[in-house]
Image (cartoon, rainbow, N blue to C red; front, side, top):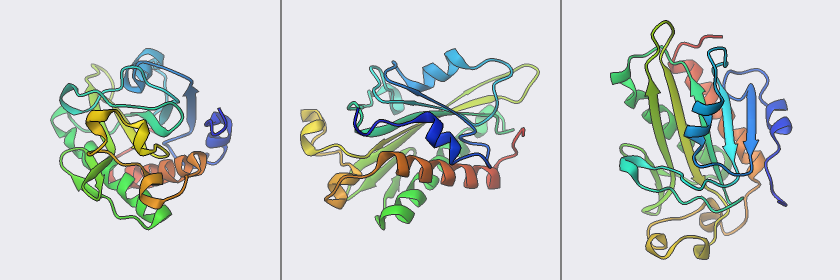
Length: 203
């Protein structure tokens, strides 16, 4: 894959924070949220990130399918221990959406609009989405998995017919391709910076 993500290089650029201190890149999985639940163990550190170059069963809000063309976007999930109760999980969705919007603005001078509860749009078309799932833990801080999808380098033809009028990628908005590796680093840095400012971390 010419523009494939490289876990070691991503991780090398994210050594000082919480999010991204451990990174795994899968060629394919059903959904990165499910993959994190399968891989994590009681000692898994907060901030584990799993990317997939392709998802066969990516999920959106209300059970909708998230289309994830191979190697064209950023599809990833983050393992978190945010120190909040289950009822407060919408705070995580808000945090992630705002951080994604901030990273896009910082990197590309585009201004995505956040469409509550979990979508980001450019010119009224969806460019990114967030799906947060929380799991109660009896003797530890509740786990949260923040699943994030960003359309990066898709062309109009990469979207299925039913989404062509409702979806957009960063490359389509910019009129040029985006370096996914560089943007992944910038996005994880912004997620980490804002997460540590808003939620307690377990170290």
